[in-house]
Image (cartoon, rainbow, N blue to C red):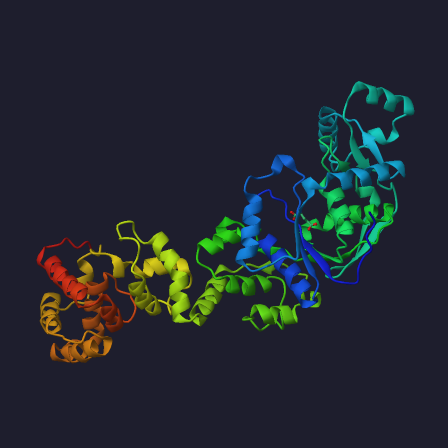
Length: 487
Ligand code: GLU
């Protein structure tokens, strides 16, 4: 069963399927993956599914989907701890045999009463060691009673446990503050502590990179390694991720699960770049780094000790940069499923691919996410634009007159492209003694139903003559109908 620690870098991502992986989990996966790829090592995926009560249906699929979406490919696994119970039992038995563990028969009621008592006395909750000191006679009686015991680790009563963390440096814990934690539960499943240590050893993990919320577990693990005469891997605990207000990351700061970002139209490359900078940096300045550059430069030495701040605006900005870097064809290809998903139901499906390919280049400069594309583009697809007539009047010019003349001039246009349209409408503004800002602003409202839209002439060119003329006529119709303007 012993497997030797190999000199090769072997790291693991070991999520528990208790929910959809959040950004912190995926940042952990990414750092492990980058470290493995940088060193030509192995990235192992291990599902820690030993907490039956907290298991969430479908969570494993979402974990795998999140990793696949981001291109974090694994070299081994997924291993499932629930399928490895044999190993944990064997190790637990050997700890019992060697006197490092003992059977505990305490009932949940007794443990609860003990906890209450400790709370009353303002003591930290800690198992009182009742079963550690059972007499042989007591043990025999309890065994005969049919109670299924748990296995607890026999924590040294004094002394301290010291270990080195690559990021945090040397850390020391007093053994007396740690309790006789459970190794094997009465349902036959191991606890996180036992399964995690056994697997890290058996899978010859060289480095443990994980969130620093696990730091308090390390002294327990180190003592387990010592009892088993195993060499512990190197530890590197990653800094927390906080919101801009320095509170724990939550929904309030934006989506928290990684897969939601996929649904919201973030590109995996932007996400990788962004997550890599949550706690790691190349030089405190460089913001944009490709996957290859990250692999090349990633090092544990540049991971910070202090918490990383999650800034949604920075992610949006970065995603916009990556979106603009796509070729127009690729941007159209990636936008298509979002248009299909989010355009109003009244827009006929399937969408016309050629039309989509002509629309999306006009939006590539403006979209920060792919999910914004349908909102930015819906006026290209709708037959009726739901805008308020007051928008046509907001320029303070004779809108009816201006649109009427524009319509007359456009009706006779033969070549309907952006250049020709500009060649007609720009001089018309002068002729009408209107600023281009006001005149084009009015046409923009009539053509798109909004005041901010992609460049007017290109938009009109893509919409085509028929749609544009119809929209101008509709605007005239709206102007002819009195509206109530609320001031
Ligand atoms: N199963 C733990 C988790 O869900 C793994 C912690 C570790 O990496 O040791 O995060």
